[in-house]
Length: 101
Image (cartoon, rainbow, N blue to C red; front, side):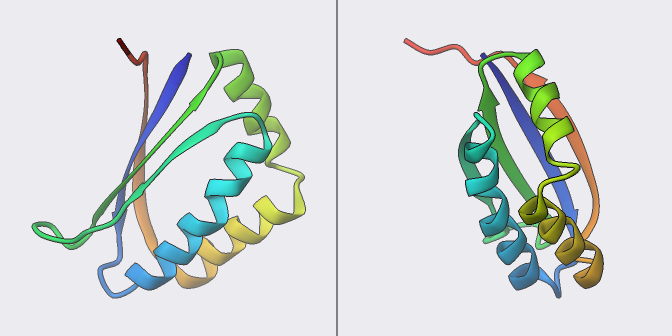
């Protein structure tokens, strides 16, 4: 299993738009074989940082997901929403191997 950790720098005046974006992506990751662990929006502290975590069975499965989202109409809507609202300023993507009991 591999977990994708995303750190977003978001527009603090567009948190609601980013939350809408997040709610669009959770079912999409699941649709393509991933397991979304949620988005984490600013509450206390920095008002422009958000996180997301989701897992895929393997890096190959994640790479297949990345190919599929380029043509899926619902994924394209989510990308369009982020571009239109400019709620995301930048993001960093890291991959981690989770350890469970």
